[in-house]
Image (cartoon, rainbow, N blue to C red; front, top):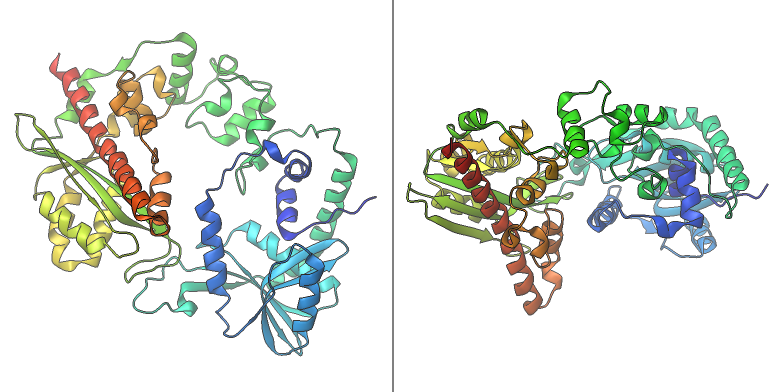
Length: 497
């Protein structure tokens, strides 16, 4: 049997789903990127910072020729005691680079660094594989640990690495998984030898397609399904969808008579029967009576910093860099607009907080879409700036959620496809209005692109910066202008009764 050359990444992908590894080897062009580039960049930044946890270290530079990395590691191991980062080893075609290796006369300690703020099972598999490799090479592995970010750490002054990172000892678990890993490696090799490049494995889809990570080959492995298939029923649990799938029920028609939540079944009925729009006027009226003029429509754009750059920020805190505000002050209905966009590379939270207090009076109706997000941003700004706390919390406490009528299906159309996010609701309500179409925007089309582009600004020319800043402003402006149009649409519905 040919031995497959495994790395810790390949091993972890294979234990999630062996076909995933087969696809990596023979049909990588079928992969869809499911992980944004910024996540990879974040992992690199966290990994580089974590190397400093134990002080001075020797770094093994990456080399496509893994033998060179192994040779450099062997040299570095001679200088005991020391810290080696990216220490590289190979046993019986199983390769790994250890993020941080503590090395002394008694043995070694493995520290696997992750950019998450909590421990995951797949991290244990990763580190346990490294334990397996080093143990088979004759090393006395004294300790195996996962190093991850501390979600409760709040920066105050200089970064404190001993507080920013949490070190969790998983030595006993890694040791106990030795035989399991040995079996897994054997099974992976058997699978790959059995399925050559000319014959794609006919593995069934299952929960492994989603956990611990969404598979990049999902579209490829489900191309046999009809366009309107069970996995497009919004809200229905993956477990229930897979249950139907395993029963051979793939399409909306296959499950239209099954006992499922009426809310989910509604999407199916609308699709199959091409039903007219559902509008519950009286319930919408009840909701609209909770809103009042003056009315302010607010939307934030935020960045998430894995490594807090400024005081008062914790890992992955949603930090605002922009807001858009449309507002109507009286019954005449004149729509006005204000906005703010931070300069890149500076802590703009104070300026944003001051502008919000300046632009939004106290005790007025403030509207957001999925308001939990905006409420959290306002609360955290209030905590950071006590002198503005009362006003910021007043804005927060007077906030209403325009998503509510759509989340509760008081207004539902076939075009919403089971969603109630603004990116589906807005075009469903205004299908022929190009000024409300996010696809017509330049450079920024969704909430995922906005922070990426904002963070990229320092690397751009002055001309490019101005172009992208304008794109950011136009995108955020459309978010709140869209809220105004939805509000007007709901007013029109109840006003006509």
